[in-house]
Length: 275
Image (tube, rainbow, N blue to C red):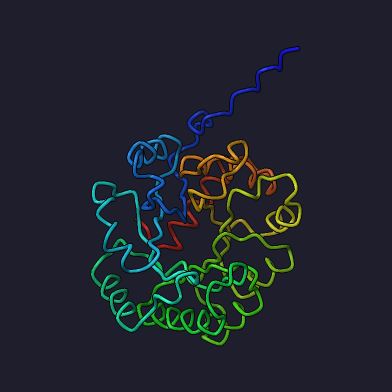
């Protein structure tokens, strides 16, 4: 017997969402997008993604790659030293970051910064030192931090509170925790960004958490080229596919996807000070 052909995956443009959404976290400067970066940005606009936040992983990446988006005004920037690159943080690197933030209005947040104990590539005390240095830079600049946390929830929380970020504007990137963790973050007045894995059937803890998060605290992200939502799981992620994360979150929030799309987009515009 011949196998039945699988139904084709829906393309993001077919959802016909209004151009009000925001991908709050993407890595479009990576080599994964060198072949079709412009095409994918065009598809994002056609799919309703009004703005995309590109995250530069350190000042060298920013200097090398910010020009890739010279003709793409819909792309805004984030810049931070990832905990996996903690050994690259120096006084010179921090000075380079400060200069970039002070000279480029497209830079809207310090991130992604934080702690990563999953890979544990660098000593935890070094990661915490680098994290604190960048939090202080964010405070000096008057810009919000965007937090990376993997298998380090308690230490990340402790550092943030030590550095005076309770009640301050902050975005917890790529939230993958449970309802208890979500309520802890909400209790400190922070925003939470939801990635594609919320659409995976077995992520029940995350789904319960997202259902409990107030709409006004939610943002959406792809973290592309990683963490692709269903039905494109296993394929390279890109900003247009954010619409499928929106579908999953809308179901959990029990609201129409276009309303969820508009609300989370507005949240991102307000959080990053976009216009």
